[in-house]
Amino acid sequence: MVTRARSRRNAPPSARFAPGDAVRVAARDVLGHCRTPWYLRGKTGEIASVHGTFRDPESLAYHKPGLPAQVLYKVRFKQSDIWGGYKGPGGDQLEADIFEHWLEPSQ
Image 1: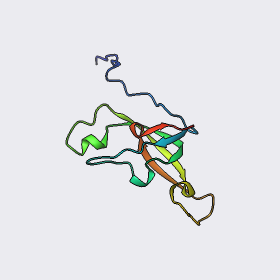
Image 2 (image 1 turned 90 degrees about the vertical axis):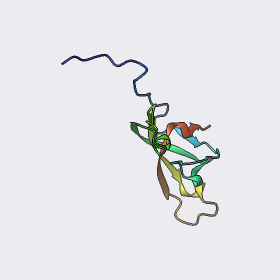
Image 3 (image 1 turned 60 degrees about the horizontal axis):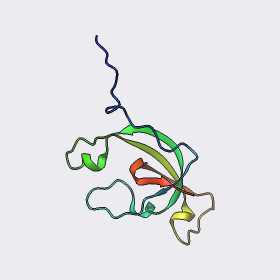
Image 4 (image 1 turned 45 degrees about the horizontal axis):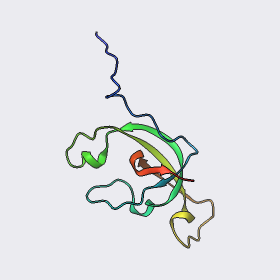
């Protein structure tokens, strides 16, 4: 069996964020298929975990190869930060899987 070194071009991207990092979901309009919930756009959350790299479902939906692969994160949000006037317990949270190209650092 012959093994070859993986070229940098085919290497999976490294994660830009780590668990505990504050991130903001980009607030941009989308035409077509999108895996990022509209109610989270523009909201700030925290990286809960890094799932790894996966082909981009936003291009897979159009029968494209989904490359380059994207890093997928589990992002945790406070319910009170998502829904204005939220009356549930203060510790209520929502977790969503969001691809890296939708995230930006938050101050």
